[in-house]
Image 1 (cartoon, helix red, strand yellow):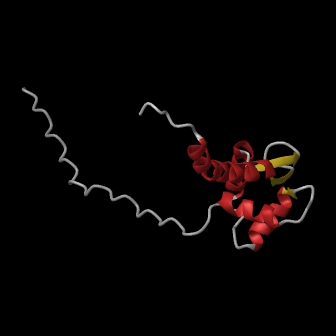
Image 2 (tube, one colour):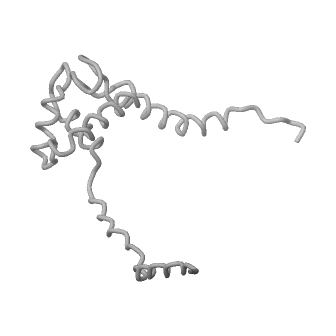
Image 3 (cartoon, one colour):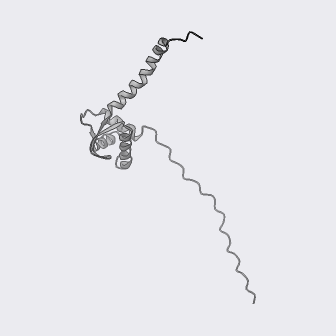
Length: 131
């Protein structure tokens, strides 16, 4: 009356390792942030461009705004926090936005000033006579 253990179930046939789905190639072209900056800079509105007007401009340029609505909002928020855009009305991603003129003039002025004045400074510094 010895009980015999049932034979272990046959191991499932060895499965081939799952292949990762082929990654979709990244689309060539400017990112959402760059498109937003172009749309805002092209606008002639004094008080800035509203979110609705931005979405219209992006969709006119061939960008699918309905599908990528969250990306548009995140890009706007990031541009505001970086200082590229200034929010003139509203909070978050809603309201009106325009380019930050201080940042664009500031970065260009800083980039040109040191390189132009550096040779002048070197030539006017007094030389040490001991060496």
